[in-house]
Image 1 (cartoon, one colour):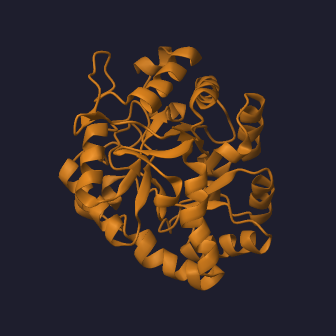
Image 2: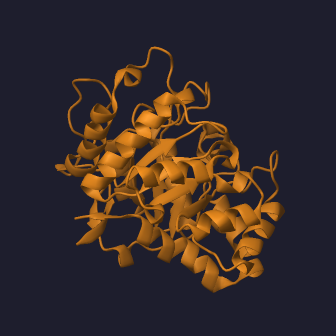
Length: 315
């Protein structure tokens, strides 16, 4: 039996609804000084705005060591009615300082932590003596493995994490999300994970849309993986128009296993923290344009069918 594992418990995949496939309710990283997501009330307000924009659920892509606060994520989910699939895993190397204890973890220790988060529940914080995170007396469990690689590189630290992710995937069936820096190294990541026993169908390549190349994306999708498109509202890098045209070109090639997210990711981009454009941007401003460009049926697959298929885990 397979289910989708949310922070409030397991649900049937068909009941998940429309999913924002990449956001962060809490995140603290040395790469984002002064831009931390660390205020429960403000994060709750932002989650409520996402729910109000038409989404039933989201993937929280904050993995181990970056301030993920699972009990408060569960409380936000309960308060807003927004389903949340939380992440275990370890991000790309640059997010962890030179003295971070995770640097000393081998693949087996990382895999054991991932399986614990998925099966038993996430600890309240990442210290060695942390108690299990609970909501309503029940453990708060992760439902996805998050990893990451650098720009056209897979550092030894990141390779160890991918090995650990493959071990945890084999034990639990959980899908693997991989951060691609600027959309690079997608085929190389799939090659490595396949050698480790993870089928491409169980992999989502996040930030694929940072590389505007429909032919390249069609080649990745032909291997069976899912692509995360989450660059809307980042006009400094790419305009929404470019992303809309990329999506249309990929769909015209016969592929639409694309998951949509905002990856707003920092305080200066959250309305509740005093920034912009906020979590509601995807639903309120981008999706109407995408529906107009490629049609409702393809968009619904991206929001509902493809996330529910990817996010299954053995119950």
